[in-house]
Amino acid sequence: MLPVEPVDEFGRLEALCSALSTENEHLWDEVLRLTGENERLRSRVGKLEGALEEARRAGKRQAAPFSRGEPKRAPGRSGRRSGDDHGRHRHREPPGEVDEQLDAPLLALCECGGEIGEDRIEYQYQDELPEPRRLRRRFAVHVGTCRCCGRRHQGRHPFQTSDALGAAGCMLGPWAVALATELNKELGLSPQKTAKALARFGIRITAGGIVGAVARQARRLEPTYEALIEGVRSSRAVAPDETGWRINGQKAWLWAFAGENVTVYLIAAGRGYEHAAEILGEDFSGVLERDGWAPYRRFTAAKHQTCAAHLLRRTVS
Image (tube, rainbow, N blue to C red; front, side, top):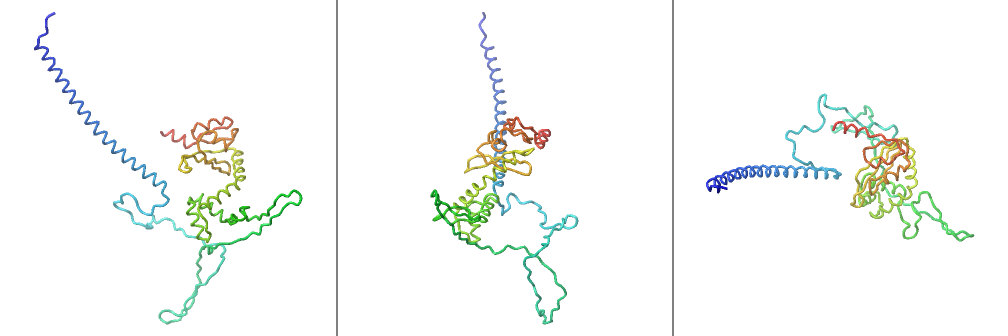
């Protein structure tokens, strides 16, 4: 074998170095391009995360007293529009019956000194709340003992909300408990704010007292809740759904079961078949109008109807 000439080997290495140098330049260009793309995507992710956080805060915010975001460059004029854009006039309808009639009489003399003559009478109507005041009750609870077996007995009035006596014998009445429950559960006031609202009526109670009163009412309403569940189970068609919820800051689920003229809610730790069966019953045989959530398929005795809104979304997508 003839030895390789040094000149040829040098030329080959020089060509290889040139090719590697060109490839290195291409790689550096690609690195710079990817670096720029990475920065652009990071910026976009930051903006989207900020928008998401703002949307979450907006969803939790109960009131927005101030404007947020950049002001409009050319904001429209506030108030009603003129012409065809004025909109439909609305006004409060006068009540059919009135509980109190008051007079707004004329003055005897005008500012100029002349006598004022009456031409006609116009009517103005007003809806008003009665002055809030506390109604204090005292129940004379009769306590006795059976002359035969010695068992203790205690009288009960329909207006009583508890059988407690002694130190625990001071409580809220049924209307006050109903109002506290509505403020706390339906309108979303915290127990502290519910207690402040009742204080406007002269009823002094702690936040813990509100929680206890609502809990006692919940226990009293358990038979009604069970009856509502039976109403859902006997419905020919039921539309169930679930959404996220929180219990003491921990993740949970709020279920809704809409039947015929009855809707039942369930707050549960999960969103599985066993939670749905707690309301529907495992042998539910009506029509189940539902989305594609897999646990619903385990109701084998039911007839299944996919939600039309979900079908439309799948068709469009």
